[in-house]
Picture 1 (cartoon, one colour):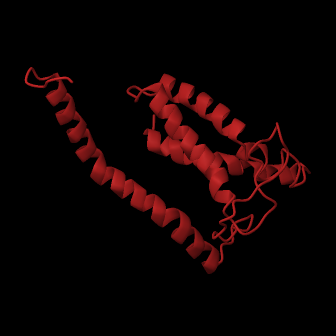
Picture 2 (picture 1 turned 60 degrees about the vertical axis):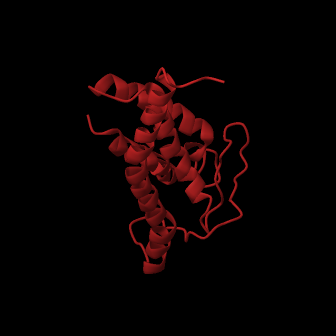
Picture 3 (picture 1 turned 180 degrees about the vertical axis):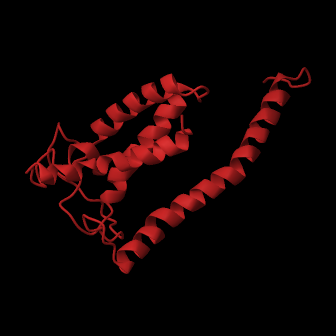
Amino acid sequence: MPPARIVGAICASVPDADVGAFGLGIPYEHPLGHRGFTHSLLFAFAFSAFATFAYRRLARKTPSARVVFAFLLICLASHGLLDAMTDGGKGIGFFIPFDNRRYFLPFRPIHVSPIGFELAGDVLWSEVKWVWLPAALITLAGKFLGPRLRRYESTRRDAQGSPNHQSE
């Protein structure tokens, strides 16, 4: 079984499977169209639950179900959030099937990627600048700060459990 971060990367791309709706004759603005249900919070929640169950059944050693679920939910929901920051398209159906309206965020610095395989330089640079570099910085911060925070928590727990520690 691949590591959870690989499963997370796969889950983060699952919402764009909805481009197949075009081939089925489903229009963009339909709830099952592009950036519709598969970009909704309900889909993110349900798919994260399914993926967590499957991952924990197949993997030999995993973090707790809550940790896996939270990680996968962030991966899936962030896709719609980032798409809502693009400068094109017809919006994101965050609340489908409860509300079929589509939304954008007020801050939309990411150039929309064309559907297909062509990527213009400005579109690619926009994604690097607004998605990949921040993600890399967050990952590096986690790698750097994670062990230090764990040591701090461990030291703090040890101090609270020691006989010399006095409660108020």
